Amino acid sequence: MAPLFIVIKLLLWANSLSVDLFSFVSEYTHNSFYTVITFVLLTATFAFVGYSIEKVGKSLLISTIDNIIDQVPAIGNIYTIIKKVTSLFTHSSKDAHRDVVLVQYPKDDIWVPAYVLNEHEAVLVLFIPTSPNPTSGYTVIIERTKVIKTSYTIGEVSQFIISMGADFVKEDEITRLIKEYNDRQ
Image (cartoon, rainbow, N blue to C red; front, side):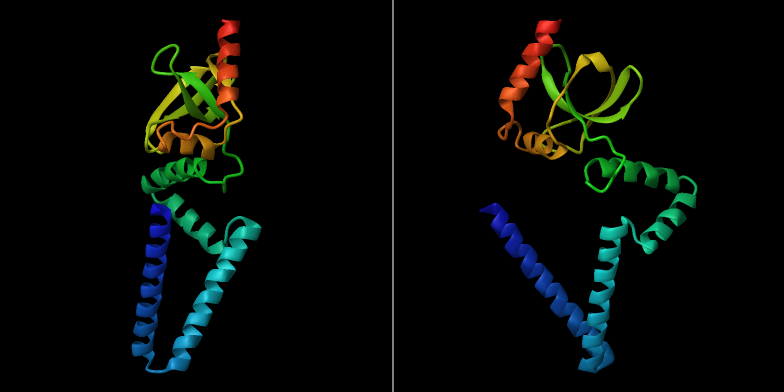
């Protein structure tokens, strides 16, 4: 019921916003023709930017803004880090690692899901999310041999974290993987 309520509230908010914007532009131009043309051009611009992002991956405008921000001392570094972290939780990044592993944390025999952020020869850099917000957590460096690779997706693990374990999919696979790991030890 809550998702339906949220969708209705968002639709009402969008309707109110569009009516307010239409009224503002209409009062400014004092001409309904110019008002309609303004909204048609605005809609076409948004559609074009969206289409170019969909087909090319990034619009020229966004690339230019990215390049300008990257050149600003200190802010450019922070911006780059935020972009990399954000790309982990979106499907837009082509080079982001999407592996989900199980790791014993904070001690042995307690298994938690983790996102692989980076891979080196014998170690992995993992992000261990915390409940109920999967964007907060811990970054750890761990030996590759101490983790179990899973077929979980970032979305499935995020649902598991947000639901605090109530939405536990692929439980048979996880049980089997942990048993196999323990048998090897």
